[in-house]
Amino acid sequence: MKITAMETIPVSVPLRTFMGGSYYTGVHNLEYVLVRLATDAGLTGLGEAGSMGPWGETQRMAMATLGELRPAIVGADPFEIERVHERMAALVKDHPISKSAVDMALHDIVGKAAGVPVHMLLGGRYRRSMPIHCSIGIKDVKAAIEEAESYLAIGVRHLKVKVGRDPKRDIEVVKQVRGLIAKDALLMVDANQGYQTVHSALDTIWKMEAYGPLLIEQPIAGTDLDGLADIRRRIQSPVMADEALWTPEDCLRIVEKRAADAVQVYLQKSAGFNRAQKCVHIAEAAGVIAVIGGMTDLGIASAAELHISAAMRNVRPDIIAAGISGPGIIADDVTTVPFKIKDGCVDVPEGPGLGVELDEAKVKKYRVDI
Ligand SMILES: [Mg+2]
Image (cartoon, rainbow, N blue to C red; front, side, top):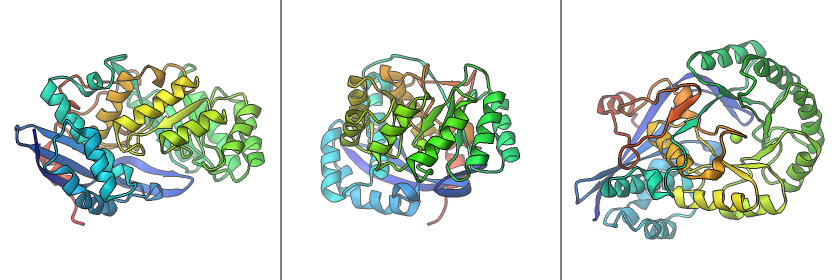
């Protein structure tokens, strides 16, 4: 089989509410690039690149990067996924978010050709549904609680509170949200590296822990693994590394330093399924849980995250965290069948490939000129 064409479609899709974390300001829409690969066998593959400037790839950059990568993709055999990555790496260093969109589309084609859902290509089915979470952006206490309530109203059970700018506000929001959600629901507290020192992080986390249980995500700079290990030893709550991890090599350093109880692994930071699986395996070998994270994605990337979560035992959503965030936060989607949120969970797609299709009318509606 040969890939005969690659289409890249920039879209901008509204969110239910504005979103913001310690290093990004409130946004009402998120921008994405959809990738559609055509083959000479008549099969097509879908991929999606989210855009995140602080992670190094905006929508315009993804459009340009995918253009540069085109010679590595068009003409390739979609079954030779690692070779396509080798060819992409020879053209463009880094840019894993753009490359992950290509990787998703290749897996979509291979799954469709084999007649199996993508999780069957990744080790087989371990679970059929996954809990999702919604992130509450940095805003005043009243607005944060209203946002939390709006997510509970649509069936979301697990919440992530973004913190890291104002400890007093952070502690109050954690206290109130913990009181709002079910006792067995997960509450993740994500500072996105916002606390400036180990001491200031500890001072705030100790106060938050009075209202636990919690998961503390990336309280300090991702580059400071010794500091993260120090925090982990001095608090009760489990610690999750996020910004500290981009590559399997990063994962190895985190587990060697015993800096985290969990690592958040993204298909987008990993340039796709293969490197993400390497991170999950390294973590598992060290007794560390690997949570599959989301970037508030549309249906294509959320489906991809559901497939890898379905296949990997070590994701363990039952005990530590729910990483996927798109289905509860986006106000609309570009795929034909929206995910149904039931009891805090969404089902893993069971159709061949990623198991999702584009809704052409929605694609037209949200397409942007850049
Ligand atoms: Mg995070």
